[in-house]
Length: 464
Image (cartoon, rainbow, N blue to C red):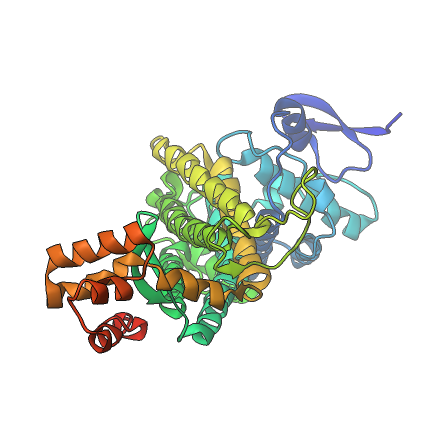
């Protein structure tokens, strides 16, 4: 039998596990919201601890909080930031729409740990009170929106941008090796004019470069924090400069230049910048899915597909077909991208559902934006390291396919005209000959002229 202790709140007594650092409000939320088992990511809890730490420092500096209490709160916050109490934040993301339950979960854990530091006993409300001291100058209504911004910014800075930069660098460096490899271009999945492999990969590199720019472009607005707005944006029960002071402390703690929101009513009633960021993540996801699809098709085979490249063999691909190896990383990339696109829909609906002075779908937005950032970062890194860096090019096979490509006759248009060039294509296809052979046999060009005009390097001279 598990040991319990009795905690009290405004609704009465609650049985809380004796080993838990949370209190009555957290326990009620555990019992009220047994929906999914999906918890907030560690970075979100870490961000809440950063916020509580900043608030404790500001309240102490303003003479509103005894230094010994501030020091104990700060120590508890730092321990949470270090991950020492990850098991103390059990709440489901599907809960009260303001995230009040999670805000109180953090307040109670910090208060209990601070009291343990001060007294040696696990006490939830004395001498450090979760509402009066840990939550001083705050409301869930400004704390949770602030935590969404802080956690999203941290994940973008620490995880996503480095991964996208690695992917861009890997694609660029790999492409330089294939400047002279000319291959069949394809439009509508049908043979088209030749391109170099470097030119083809330059498109991927540009997509990732633009993705980096797009995500970075949201950061100035993501750096604005709601803290200081308290209940409805007016800043009730907080000093006039509380938001600015907390933002400055948070900047020092995280190394990110956070500022107080320019308009607290916007910052708490809406999460427009999260929708903006999610939109950029969705765009990035479509880019990565396109790259993954190209890689899958180029790798298709090894006998009856395009077989232009060989992706690294990472694991057996079939439980019944011996020797089969599948493009598992590109497949995983596509699933991640689909999830990010779905997350964007949830975030958009949630943000549009704000009411008056508060959006009350904050927890699901917090979870989805952090998941999108995290999984996009992870697949970008894996795509770079496990696919792009290691694939090999089947140059002989590519050259053979190129030689038989009838659409190279496009370069004959200025010389013969469209109709005669089309006749050449038909003859080449019907008789299984190259365009060069067909145009010479038809007497339209001499062998020397055909060699000069149908040079594959000449046809790819434009672009990269």
